[in-house]
Every structure is written in structure tokens, then in C-alpha cells.
Length: 577
View 1 (cartoon, helix red, strand yellow):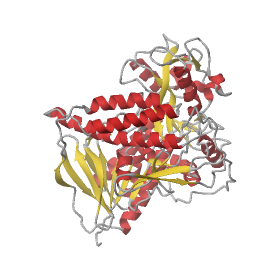
View 2: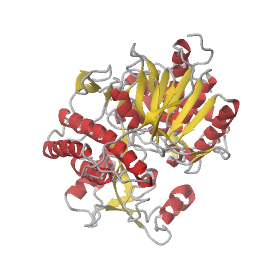
View 3: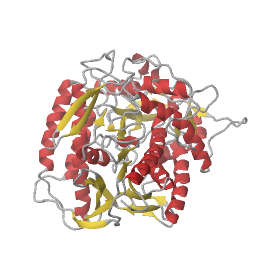
View 4: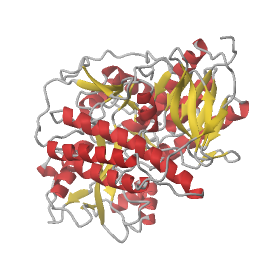
């Protein structure tokens, strides 16, 4: 207990992970930053381009003229169908304003008007335009300033990068205290144990158990699985957001790539194969309704066979294709790479794409999970967004709670220093049993297709029960795998770990969806179409035998009304710019 430097382990190198590492290091901790991806030290660039952060074009912050934190909180709670933890929603909205100032202090410049006021963009469910942006590449520019700050901390020795390592187990001592993280080298399959008394899971949950999905396939719920197996609670797992307008492309790299929802606010229209503009049949706001509403409308057209052969509908951009060239240069570039140029065409084929898990590890306002020393931020955490995440709240949440997790993980590590100050050590080799009959990639492909059509935006007990039975079969098959020899073996072993984690997450999504006998936010049951007058949440944790324990809970805002908000001069969390 006499070590001079506390140690924090951060898993994940997207926006949440980088913010966590920066804040933990600045709070006096030594940080091990762990990533499955590769890191180029001379250029200080992530091979994975910073998780999902780099793809995001705007985030919500109540900094525009006439906007307020109180309005942002109200929109967030309403958008989340009052399933949000109200304390977390408040922290998100208050700290998003501080986040803008902090990013500016790092050198980021937002779009401003001639009066030096923020120019903002609209997102569905927001009472006023709230999305701060820079071109349509805000995430890319955020990544640049975060990497530059991280470079300084790496050079000073405050942060150590551990690349090509995948977290597989949270290590505890005989007193059930966290003492490190066990990882696997994705190439050599060596087991590497990293010491640390505080761990931040910021690896991005990822809805990659569905196809199509906007998540990159390296986002495989590793943190969720590790946290659950270590005894932490998870919540809100039935709530899976589908982005309404994922590109339906024959080029796999771009299939599911997002067409920003702001385009619909600029006049893009949704048309089915019969030529009918259908969204006003589902919601009075038509194409500008919230993401869950628009996704459900499109998905319903698909189920009713009013879609095209590739399960898509048309997004007619004829009234706004000139706007795309001027306002959305990154989208324009992406569309052209996908062999679609708005100059020559006005119809995009789109379909709902699995985009975001609202559920995750249960955290409090300090980003602390339900076991001491474990923290989570970004898509690894649950409770902030409730039943449906507002567009624009995802990136702000990742960065806000990444910073918070870094600060309080450093404080925890300072008070709970390890007695062993060793460096990461090789502890063995990851072993698998081969000789089975099933290939992990084949099961993964089946999982993703079945989850989309059986546990997608519209659910019913027959399809969910069929999915549950199919998951049991896939679990049996996953215990009877065959692996190639040579260089391909390590890739297949990673796929087997992907499969294990995604089967766990999928099983919990389906079970939670069967238990929730109402429709709320992104969770829509065709047999229970009404929303109950009050919200009861559902949490889950593992028992000592590996089974699951489900519990109910309620929040203070479960009556589905907005409680009065007292304006505050600053967040109680105490983050600074």
C-alpha cells in the first residue's frame, strides 16, 4: 500500500477511452491504455480511426441561442421514454456544455456564425437545433485533438499504450478486489496480465450481433461480458437502437453505412416500392420523427413486403442533393466510394441498421459500476439514454462519461493502490479445443441475420421465442468448434471469442425483450403496443454458478413526467474545461 503512483487500466481507444485515459493521467494515475487495434507510434494515429467517434458529425450541447440545459434534459428524458436514469441524464446535459469548452481548450474549433455564436444542427426529438458541428466531420476533428493530447501524455510517461491485446477477464484477489486485467495477444495468443486496481471499460458495446449494423465488427461486447462475469450489473438490454437510414449497398464495407438523419430535416423523403411516401402513416412528424419511430416505420414496410428485393426502401434526396454537396462533404465522399453520386442519382436504397445498444453495465453519476474499482463509459455503460438515444447524444455521452470515469477511477486507484507494482506479464497461452464440426464465422453470420429479423425494431413473442431457441442451439454449436492451423488459427480464435460474447449479449437482449410486456422507445412489441403509465427497469447479474439473476428497479421519473429542473451554475461532478 506504499506505492507512489496509482494505476488505471482503460480498455478501448475510441472517444470514451481516449478521454478516460487523458483525464486519469491528468489526475495523477499511470494509465495502461489497452486496444485490440494497432497503434502507430510515430504518427500517433489509431488504425481503427478512434472507434465510432471519427464517424460522428455532431453532438448535442445546449450552447446555442435560446437553448438551455433544462430543455436538453427534458428532450433526453422524453426521447428515452422515461426509462433513463434521471441523474445520469442531468450529468450528460450539464457536462456537455463543459465538454464544448474543454474541447475548445484543446484547440478544436466549432462552426460559428458572424456574431461568434455556435451554429447548430437539428436531430429528431430535440426541441431546438442542438448539434454542434464542424463541417460534417466533427468526430474526425475531435479525434485529432484527443490524439494530440494523448501524444503529450505518452511522451511524458503518464500513459502506456498496449496494442493488439484483447481484454478477456477482470482479475480479482482473494478478497474479491480488482487487481488487474487478463488479455490475449490477438496474434500470438499469449495471455498478458496487466496490473491495476481500477479498470475503465470503454470498448464500445456495439450492436454487431445484428446485420446490417453500423458498428464495426471489432465491437463485440467484450466489456459487457467481462463486467457481467466479474459480478457487475447490467441494465436496459432490451433497448437496441436502429438508425433509420443505413445504406443498402452491395459493397460490404458500406452496407449499413449511415446517411445522417439531418438529411431528412433538409427534405429527404422515404418512399416504398409502391411509390408511396409512407412515414406520415406512422407518425405526424413523418421523416423527422425520432429514430425509433422512423426505423419502426421502415421496418414495418419491409415486413409488409412493400420493400425492394434487398429489403430496402427509397430515400429520395432530389430536393436536397445540392445541400449534401455543401453541408455534408464526408457523406458525399462516402456515397461516392459506395458507387453513388448525388449529382447523377436522386434515390438512395436504405434500411434500418442496428446502431446502438442503450443497455450496458449499470453506472452511477461517477461512471462507477456496481463492483468497486470498475468503471464504464460510452456504449459499454447503460442507463443514460433510457429506451431510445436521441441523435446527437451518443458522442457527447461517450466523451462526457469517459472524462468522468477517468477522474474517479484515478481517485479510486489512489485510495486503493496495489501492493505489487509489477509491469504487464505473460501468464500463459490461450488454449482452445479443436476437432469439432462448426466454424465460428458461420455461426456468427447466422446469428446476425436471425437477430435482425427476429429481435429487430418490431418484436413479437413468437419470433423472440424462436430466437431464444436458436440461440440455445448456437451455444451448443459454439462448444463444438473446429479451427484452422497456422496463421488463420488466431483469427478464428478471435471469431470464437466474438461469438461467445455476442451470444451472451444476444441472449440477454432477447430475454429482456420477452420480459418487457409493453412498447417503449426502441423496444416495440406488436402484441403489447401500449406504453405502461410508469416505468420499471430490469437489471441482471451473474450468480456464482454462472446463471443469471434478474431484478426490477424504479427511478424517480418513472411516472413519465418532467420534474422541475433547478438551473445550476455548474455540474456537481466538478469537471472543468
